Length: 77
Image 1: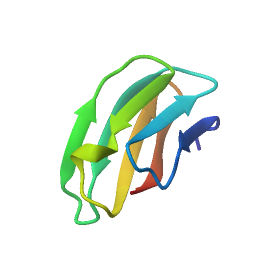
Image 2: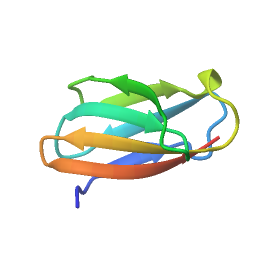
Image 3: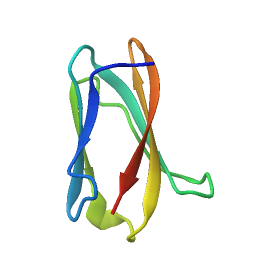
Image 4: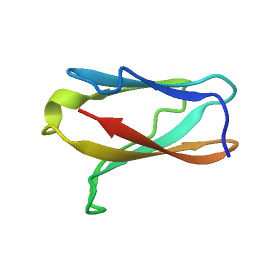
């Protein structure tokens, strides 16, 4: 399990910010609950901002890839 990953605010109105304390984030994928990939970005930084205004209200799964592994986060709008 990858430690030190956080997402805020959650639930979000305008944007989600995903931060990593210990390592760079190499990729973030955003999926709806049907498993459809809605977004993929490759930041290579310790902070990623996702514009929540691009997506309808609901629950999403974000897969966050780091140098230390992968973690899934539940994002709510």
